[in-house]
Length: 272
Image 1 (tube, one colour):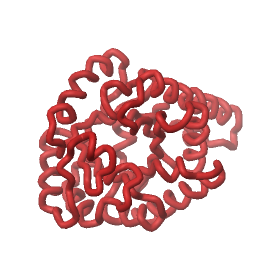
Image 2: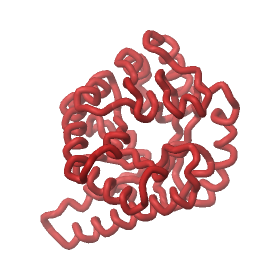
Image 3: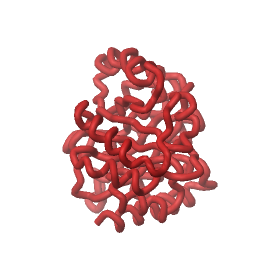
Image 4: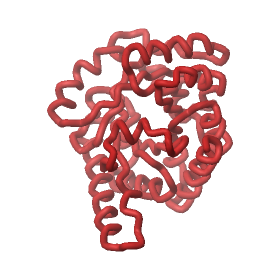
């Protein structure tokens, strides 16, 4: 559900400090469970929902999940509008596609991270999937968020499938060069990714190096499971911190809310 100021302005707005994104993988849970988790995440302070992740999830599964989450958000907005004590704007949270490829699209999404995997060694993830998906996104009216995407060691499945030349610790100069290149291409966002469920997060010096290119909005994800790890990313210059695995691993909705609340509190206190 689009916020009042529109998707791009909402994403690029830095007045709120560092914010949190919950990544929902429709290939790992039913649409019903995904929706419950998304609503719980927003209650805990998440400011955006990404839908995607798995490389082989078909578009009908992605669409079912997006539509289910959007329907639930509409109900929350309506309920809030009937209660003068409720914050209606709290529920106007964008649902954005984070696709593994052109097969994982949905007209129910508010937008899409339209990404170039900049350190891929193959054409498919530099321009091929984008060529396949663009006509459908135009038809659907899904708003693109132009995004440079960099995969860091250990990289996980995305590094393997994307055949990425993984960026290692100590390569701050190449990270800065990639960030400058992203700016010059006209990308508004740069996503620094360690890989889903990674054993370590993107290192602080790499984030700082990318953050020197102030025109870019930095999204950092992969390997972030604790408030301390999230705070490190925020202090280093992340504008958004993404978590996904900690949501899937939570044993209950209460535990999910507690985990995300800790992450949100940590990044907000670190970037204020």
